[in-house]
Each structure stands twice: as C-alpha cells, then as structure tokens.
Length: 468
Ligand SMILES: [Zn+2]
Image 1 (spheres, helix red, strand yellow):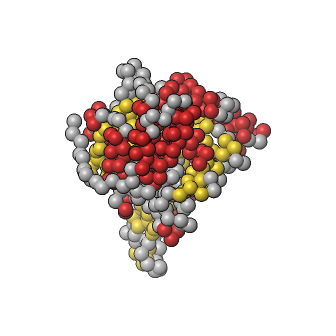
Image 2: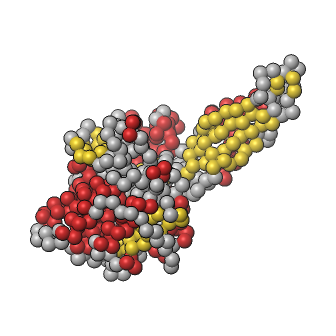
Image 3: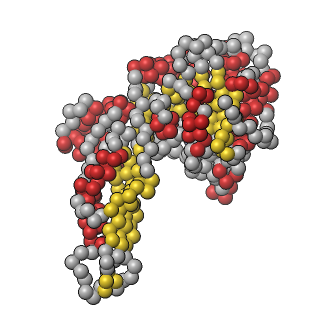
C-alpha cells in the first residue's frame, strides 16, 4: 500500500492541545461530555478557519491538519492515511480498530467547502464565530460539522478506552463539492483501506425543524441519477422565402411537446416508500390517504395525480426529464440547419438510464432527432433500509428523540455517497443535524448551525459509534 504524503503548514492546534490536556478530566460521564464539548467546539473552529474551497487551495491544508490531529490524539501511524490523487485534493482515512466481530463500517464527511466571498456575507465566511446561539462560517453545516463530529468522537472514544466490536473507518474526502476525485480515488486505488459492510454519511439526512421543533429523523438512503442528453435535428436549410416541408426547429419542437406531455411511470424503492409512509403523518387527510395508498402500491390514478401536483413528490416517485436549453437556426431569413435542445434527466436509482433513453426515443417519435449523452449516468443503487439498519439508526434517534418519526429520503442532488453506493457499499446519510427546513444555508450566505443542534449531533454519533 502506498500513500501520497505531502507536508503542509498546519494552523491552530488549540483543539488538539485540549484533547491532550483533558485526558484526566473524565471521572464522571457528564464531566467527560462537557470536556469534549469544549474540545469539539475548538476543533470545529480550527476546521472552519481553514479555507478549504477549491479556489483557495482545496483540501491540502485541512487534510494535513486532520491527519496530524488524529495522530496526536493517539491513533497509530499505520492507521492514519493522508492520500489523494493530487496534492491539492487530499483525503484522510483513519481506522479505529475493533475486536474483529463483523466487517468494518465506514463513516464519511467531506473537508472541502463551496467558495464564499466576503462581500456577499455579513461576516468573514472563513472566520468561525458564535453569535446568538449559532455557529457561523462557510462549512459550519456543509460539511465541517460532520468532519468534527467524526474526528472528535473518535478522539473521545479513544481516550475513554472504548474498543468497538468491529473496525470503524473514518473517510474524509477532499473535493466532494467539485469533481469528487478524492472519494473515487480512495474507492478505486485503496479499496483495502476503505472497504466496509456499509457507510454512514454525515453529509446527508438530518432533522428538519418545523416551527422550532424536530419533525422527523431523516435518513438519506438513495440519490437520483443525473443524466444529461443533447437532442439535435439537422436539415439542409435554404432561403426562408421558399420553405421546405421539413424544418429542424419544427421537428425538434414537436418532439419536445411530446416530452412535455409524458410522465415516466411511478416507481418506489425502500427509501421513497418509507418517505411517503412517514410523510403521511404531516399531511391533510386527502394527501395523507394518497401517500399511504402509494406506499402500499394501491394508489388510484387520481391519488397519483394529486401527489404529482407537488414538484417534490412528483420527482420522488418517478424519473423526470425536462428540457433546459434550446438553440436553433443561424439567421432570421434562413431555414434552420440545426436545432438543439438539452434535456436533463433525474433517473430513479432503480430505473435503467439506458431504458430511459429508449423511452425518450419512443416519445420523441422521430428518428431524425438524434440523442447523445452529455453527462453520462453514474449508477447509484438505493441502499436497502434493512431492519438492522433501521434499528441501529432509528434506535439512537428513539433514545434522544422519543416518538420522532424515522424516515428514508432520496435526494435529487449528488454527494460522495453516490460513488460509495456505486462501489457496492450501501450508504446512509445520517447527519443527525437539526436545521429549520425553511432556512437551509448550505452553499449560500451566512451559513450557520445552531449551537444546540451541533452538540446534539455530536451526541447522536457518539451513541451510534458505541452501538455499532
Ligand atoms: Zn456536502
């Protein structure tokens, strides 16, 4: 096994010093938890203060910092790996050795962030601050809360002398927000280091708050598959004063009208079935009945049509393909020689992208409309919501949030989890991080996480790691 180790200057290590200084402070478990809250908060601050967006140097510095922190926190050199496809795209893998009872479990987070500009924010995005009950800074939610949750809990459990039944593997990737080369490199070139029975992703799922209260514990168990197609019609063209019977723009437009009137068939997987079943609790009676019927495969056409009125429910229950760009013709007085459209599909993970393209050909109903894929699909099978997984993830939720519904969710965007599922490792997004569902600031300005939600997520993962 080879790892690519690069020496990088490391910033503040206050969190680390606290780790080392507080070894003696754990007589009572409450005391231990308070001690570790301080350590976690300081580590969080150090991580957010490292500007790990791609234009600001990417993950090199933060990866080196994370690896050094874990080494100094007591992990053996052979269990801490700093690795990546390129010096500016570095990841970290840390193995917490267990008693060998069962295959390892991966736990993942990404260290890079989307860039942020000082002038767009009310404060400096790369200076961590605590204000009015919130932690502010780029990456506080996406996904440095996850990074610190994994790191601080590994450090805490190590100091407490905890030995898990099976190995826990922390995987911190370096470019999730851009090319995702980091996770692909680890899965392809270092499978032995990261191979696991399943993966828990801190960058998915969560606890949406409604009216200031947790509404559900959400487990992201699937992601839709992204597929972009280019449609094109060509024609010899000519002078517009003598139109031919065939016309590239009309032919393409007719195909697009056909597409606009087509709906892909409804299909559920484990994850979306759980989503509709649990979501029914929050709905008006008619919608609730439609969701329950859908979840038990007995929905009528009227019930499906009712649910499809919501763009979110519609895209959760079927593959969608929609025209997003259009070009055609070259002069106002010439017959068009080309007409092109871009169609973006979000394919259900259980559907076949090839079949989606075949269906589109049938719907377009014109052999002269060519179809090529601009962004090919990366398959990402839904992760099975097995009783064991639901018991593990839902069990800790039930301890901390008695009575809170636990539901699966399929997201329409993509995370590193896509590649992990593609590599055959079922992946469950369980950030356990609470946030107001109407105030999501990841990738946006003034990104923040509530102080209370942060410590609760820390506690969730602590219990989760002990329960594996
Ligand atoms: Zn993320």
